[in-house]
Length: 114
Length: 119
Image 1 (cartoon, chains in turn purple, blue):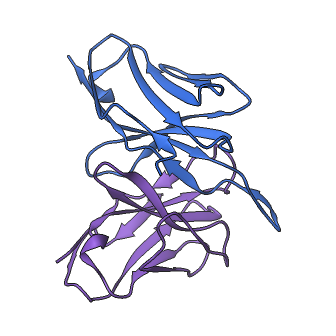
Image 2: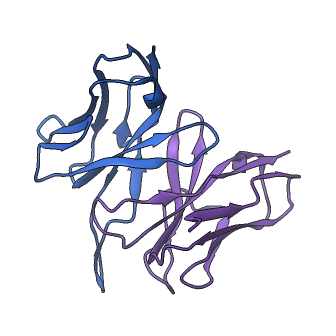
Image 3: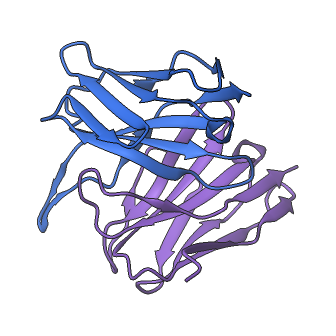
């Protein structure tokens, strides 16, 4: 039982390049989330998927797209990377999007855009 | 507009003493509050949560207090241990009504407080 896994762990991109961050969970959770963490800003929600087949914007969705490929996998795509997207990205999942439901986080992807 | 604020960037405590981490919020629609702990190079892990219908929730050494009128919550750790040294985030959520019901997926996090517990 690996929980939430993310690939890659580290990535360096040049401005304008594209990439997809992968996330998978093996807990049969319905809801999945993508966050970014920046110094002094805490974690900010980019997109989330309350259930398979649905996605919704979070607090900072601009410059990102997501795909809920199936119940296990939720990917985050940067179409044209910008230095402002340098951050640590966390994927999370929860059984449902219920009040107080614990979200389980992956180990993060550290992305640098030069 | 920071809806959830942790005004203390860091806190230093002696082992065995009480650690008190504070969090303030501005959105009166928040009805669930959670605390997460984060070690370096790892993802956050859930600690404890509280519903807005309660004013206290306890789990072992961890107790969360909620003061709705002041829009303030705090996490008490008693006794503090060196292994508690980490970044602590408070988070809040409000129910969003969809066609299929109400969801609470959107967590709003504070900036975090670095807790250091000295042996």
